[in-house]
Image 1 (cartoon, rainbow, N blue to C red):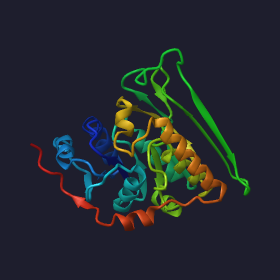
Image 2: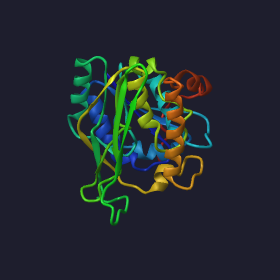
Image 3: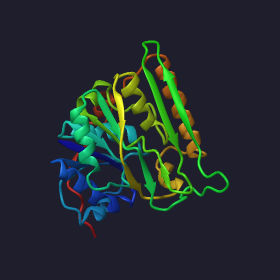
Length: 276
């Protein structure tokens, strides 16, 4: 019924997060698909050593940089279920939330879903000082009458909460209808909001938000260290946003699922390497 797609490259948080993902998948007769995009296979196997199925690992040749959009598109190709849940490798899911979201999607064609937000495992992980919280609201109206609103904020330094646009549930058919993620956006910071934008403005779908998960707190090196070098994550996000907005203005709402999987056709299901 559900495939949880998790992209990975040398992130040790997965070991803490996997038990909750596997249990959430099992609760709806689903699976977890982990896409190792250029990471150390033995390091991954060590984190999965005590984890029972249902999960599969997808691997391929060495990659110079991590690319979340490409890796998600690869994961979707291997997904065996009609509903996809794109989940980061550092998320601990609460009992019952995934089942509830799956039920809502099945009862409401024409919708996709994201979690309402996450709570950090370490409050004020971003190191806020005088500014306790900050965020933004994006409003877009297109010539064909479609409207988009995205509200996003960085972690609230007092309670550790923030939005979670990247924790996305969508039917595989709706995902493929807009050709999945757009690998033109390479870096950290906008590929998630871009999916929401294209599913809404291009696919004509309505967003559902529900529930909170735990985000295993980490520094910015964990966010941007495996991507092409930038001065800060904000540089990456700004560049990706400008690229995406230019696409929307030209009425381009398709992703790169087919071309990404053609380019990366050598990715295959692999058995986790034995842990030391």
